[in-house]
Every structure is written in structure tokens, then in C-alpha cells.
Length: 245
Picture 1: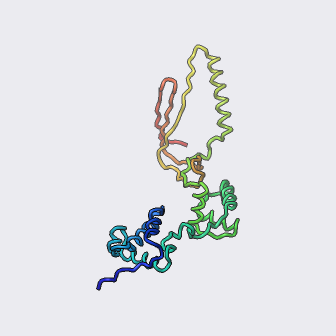
Picture 2: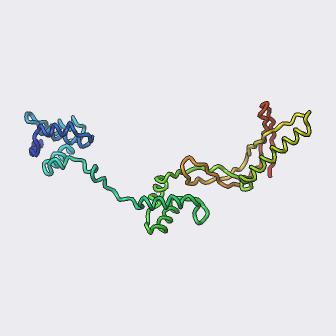
Picture 3: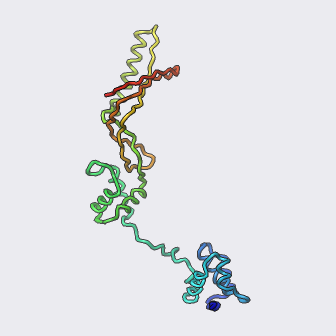
């Protein structure tokens, strides 16, 4: 048995419906105004099926919009999420987020790496607020942290002070050699190596976006390829070494 035509309660005049439909800038709300406008035409109002075909909505949804308009008037068509976005408020205030950001600049108390569960425990310890580890992960992202793969750094590598001292001493040494042997050509070669075999596993860690992170490693390898390069004349020499220390 076919359904009867929906009768629209005349809360607003047809001209006012047309004006509100044309002035509306919200897509979903504009479609609802169009539904009521088509169903309220003074002459030859459309059927629900015709309105559904024009608007791309289902017939049941068109009937729901019509019933809501009949019960609430224009308030039933307004998008309620604009004034009341809903959802839970953030667990941490802006001040608390700033305090959390400053604390995350230093390693955790256990000396390991930051993770979602650890940040959740930190929030509970500092602010007495219990959050899920997923929420803690979202705070890491919101504060500008990204999950990065640290560049391996050998545990026995030189410190910054040692590298600067070496550069200064080496520069003076080259000058001395050129002064002692003015008729000889003193060349400076650079050396790099590519290690083959078991490589260290470096865990990803949370760090500020675009920052450079390094992770301590002690590689265990059996073969190393050494390359010596002379930048001045693009000369190079290669050595394959079977064992390394």
C-alpha cells in the first residue's frame, strides 16, 4: 500500500524557505533546507521519492528530515555541530601540555625511549590524570613529536670536542709536513667504510619533527669495504677486508 504524501507544517513561508536555502553555506544544512523547500512548493509539491532522487538522499532520510522540521521548525534543520561540536574536552590544559613538552625533552627515568604507555604513566604521575596509551600517543603528535629512526652512532665514537681537536691538530700537521718537505706533494685522502654482515637493530624513537636523532650501536661484522678518496683529483682506492675489530 503506497504511503500518503507528507504534509509540511508551514512554520515559514515558501519565500523565506527559498531565501534561507540560498543563503546557507553549510552543505548538509543546505540540503535539508532544499528538502523542505521542495516538499513545501505552493503548487504541485514534490513527492518524497522525487526529492530523494534530486538530493541524493534515501526516501527514509527525506521523511526523517520532514518529520523533524514539522516537530521543531527551522531549529530542526540547523547543523547542531556548529555551535556544539561535542566530544570530550582535552584531558590536559595548554599549561599542562607545555609542562609535558618540557619534560619530554629529556629521556625517561628508566633511561630508555619515550612511548605511548610511558607518556601515559608520566601524565598520571604529574597531573593525576589517567589517559589511554592511544591518547598519550596523540599528545606526542600534537606537541610536534614524530616517530623517527635514529642514525646509528658507535658507542666508541669520538665526542664533539675530540673531533674538533683532531681537525685542528691534523690541519697543523699537514702545514708542518708541507713546510718540512716543500719539494714534495703532500696529499690528504679521506676514508670511509661500508660494513657487511650483522647490522645493529636501532629502535625508532619519538623526537621533534625535522630534528636529527642518533642511537648508540655496537655493530658486529665480519667483512668491511674501505674506500679512500682524494677530492682534489677524484682518485680513489678500494680495499675489501675479511675481518674487522
